[in-house]
Length: 117
Image (cartoon, rainbow, N blue to C red):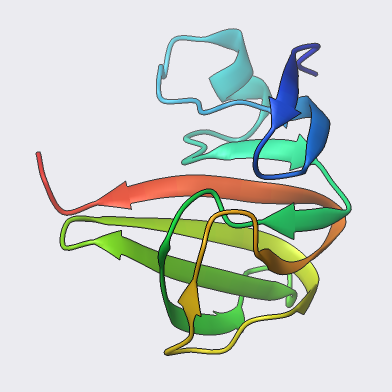
């Protein structure tokens, strides 16, 4: 388990305990313990907030049958918020920094997705 804390985390609106970090090193102990590649960061959370301006492009379910929200911030960048038990946004809605995205089910999995290399 990770013991880091992100002070004044913009995604959770408070200090956020990091439960699991991004993992891509196949030789690491964390990779082996957690079943492999982990594409984002898991943060202990209640309410979850937008990290910047954008447009909600998808609201659906994740692999845990909870909600997943994808927000497009520019032509090449999206972020995803997963493991939400409720959402406060709809596809097509413009969103600004600090808007409530939803409520996490214990933690939020947050990941950055880009089409650039």
